[in-house]
Length: 153
Image (cartoon, rainbow, N blue to C red; front, side, top):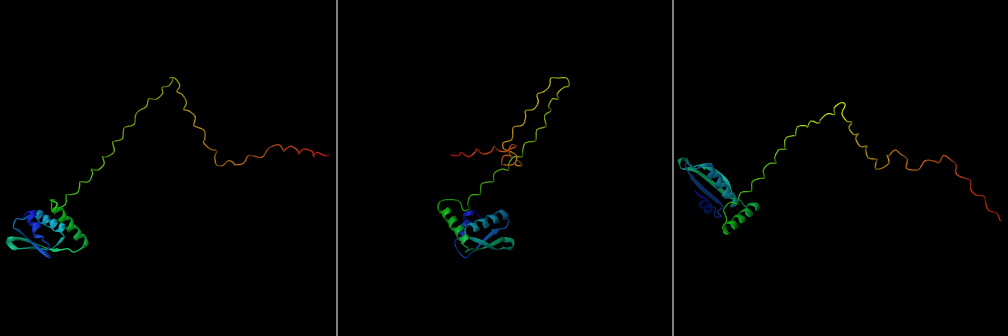
């Protein structure tokens, strides 16, 4: 049973039955369930029909999301699109593992008796005073001078 024949069976009736002959594959059953889902149906029962094959029964789903899904599918079919929406784009590949760590490079040791190496530069001065210093200036060590004598007239 091809997709168009399955689609024609889902015509808006309350119940739809699809018969798959002997030798059907589970892929065709899954395809029928996907088409029924897209057209607003849910599978009710799957029963064996003896040597003839299997019979799938679907019921129309009246939930709001099923109605919306049915409307979108019908609109896609009227515009000439496929029964089922295109599959989602595959997820992006996983990020590459980090590159292996580079082995440590061997630095040459200074040889004894060779030219002296330059000392490392001094650290930069602090940007602000350390927090344990007082914020007010210290007391003067000398008392202030006496006030000037009053001018008398």
